[in-house]
Image (cartoon, rainbow, N blue to C red; front, top):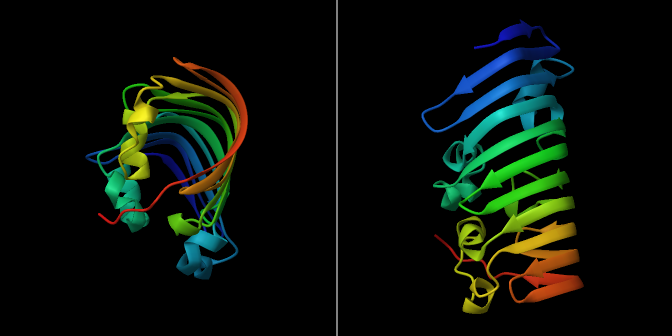
Length: 193
């Protein structure tokens, strides 16, 4: 349900509540476009401006639009944020995300290249990110090495730049085995599901 305004150049949904069997999305989404024809190239031509609050998204709903993410379909993510841009070039501000049993992210992210996740570039400014290997494995799609599990909770502030399986992380890492300031490149082998 929502208060809706639809025309040949916009669809505005205020006081929004979208509920699927798996997800709950709330607050406001505005979509602006030049004409109805732009909807045929939604990912590149429809400008989004959304405010999400108390939103819970199950990745099986996202995988419907980005099939490459179907290996993550058991993951649920809680989100509060402001999103602007097109699907292929998103700006995400004041992002507060929690997932898994022990993971949370606060910061801002620019994402270019969706829906092709393997070709998507991510530029994230991380105010505070904490996680555990067991929460990352379903997202990365591969089992983490035992040494990563031994780190326990991983806290990070700094930046991530790159692709899902090949990125640079620089900033401050804190774990149960110690603290390190770093500028490192991480590469993960992709596995087929």
